[in-house]
Image (cartoon, one colour):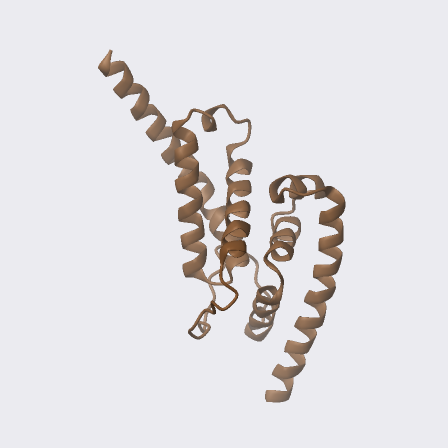
Length: 182
């Protein structure tokens, strides 16, 4: 009987390891865009994988039809929860790196464009940033995005529209400032 339990536990461990290896690159890419920095993205992915591990032990995860989509949902909701808890006085310190590594994301050609886009995303509210990343990077439908964020499809459409408007203003302002500095 103990060997059956051990075998079952080992099988669950192996299944989780395979899932983690399969979803981590995509989770890192999304987390990088949500967080705006590599360290925060790695922490977010680690926290997401820890939550998935706990769910896997309760035997919910193996029964899911699409565990990768579930992992993306957990990542997004973990990000939003952390942003809600974060103190409004907490500010990250340090300088932006010279080279960004967005893990397979096709980046704009010019470094100043990349920095402008990253800075613009950082100025958006966490919910708006999450909606834009899911809709336009992950290429999810409005309904899938609504499901992952935990709101209605109408709210996703509204958020996308307003966030894109804000994003355009911030990117244009940033590009003008960059041109003036040259």
